[in-house]
Image: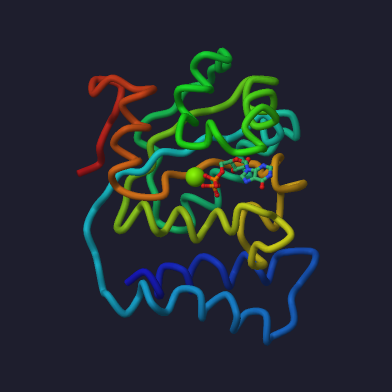
Length: 183
Ligand code: IDP
Ligand code: MG
């Protein structure tokens, strides 16, 4: 299911991208999905997304939303906010000892963001595939970070890395009454 979702999402996006990849690069994208596809997991999940300050500044809220929707993800909660340093440090607490932490906090608090809950089949993994690798220079063609990220700090979007993280991150920003599940 994941594989077919990614086929239907990534390949059309690639074909529309200015930097159209060579055929062998399409193969590389699809190979990334193979292990997850083999599991045939089709659970409906919710995951958490942030359109980061560079995405808001670059006026690509709509363009990024198309990537989610094309991958079968539904936006079931959404709001614009600006993180305080205290909020940012708590949200990214797992990275507090990393050398890039101060720069990350400075960046994520530098302007407004849009926080969202995305829902769909295998939403956590699908969103990570749609996002691409943390470093846009290493992201696969057709992913959000490949298409819109600037560098490893300014990489356009955040997405939960597990169902457990998603639950924590969703609860960090949303009350249950603010989430409108399509299920
Ligand atoms: P992820 O966003 O792909 O899950 P994480 O390792 O959780 O990546 O890192 C959180 C965020 O911290 C990244 O999205 C990026 O903005 C920033 N970051 C991660 N690694 C680096 C790095 O090596 N240098 C600078 N910033 C980084
Ligand atoms: Mg992460």
